[in-house]
Image (cartoon, rainbow, N blue to C red; front, side, top):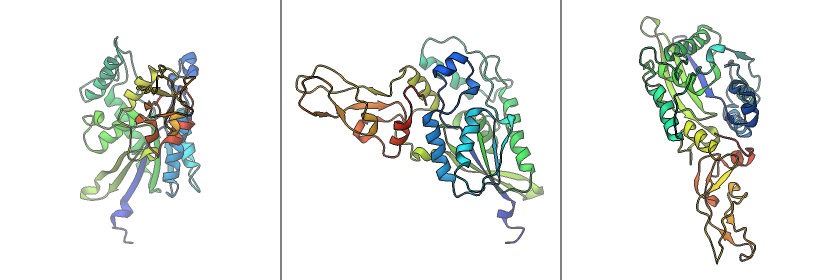
Length: 318
């Protein structure tokens, strides 16, 4: 192939968000240190799904922020790669540093407030919460991590595992929107973004080509994933340790009780738990799975996500 061919000047970055973690787990609440939070069982499943999807790709570089959740995600993914590169740490990929939240009364107010910070990230001096990191400065350090990577000439394909806020900043930069597009890029846990970088052209300029955004190998078509990751975290937090919330468990033949069927998350219809129901009576439980967001009859649970839901430990949040 000619040295002038575009592929000889093109490099690809697979930019991931770490897998799911439980920021409200007993260990985190006790320590008060959200930075040391590790992957949940669901997070490991998401990382494994990403690893299987990327298993055939010959990576030359692998980077993460160094925080446990990104390091664990990268290590799981790389375990599926033959002749995987050594995992490197770049602290410039660490998540946006937050500040103090203004007082709110409801989850809805909190979600709206947190979204508003991203929406006005492009304003001069805008910070991630009161007293938090300046968005422009966070973008500059995240971009410097990619710039340093791109300055190395001996690679073609790289894996970079970072965080939701950092990924939003990098994608906004990649589409030449500076900070204006940050609030538009949703980043589900365990997602993959694909960005190509070309060198050459007019005066050797570089351009970024966004090939894919927010791919989730554990549920490619995002069936039932209608909540944003922030909404899912807040909704599940309010439900404590419940795995499946039965919203309209039907009554049958004089049944006056409502029961929670632990098998519903495995894709089975609910079974009445009253003492005197017809033997083995099956009911069409209408429920919401706290793990993947699916709403509807439990028997219709999406086929590509039950393993994730089954493997997660009670109390995990998206």
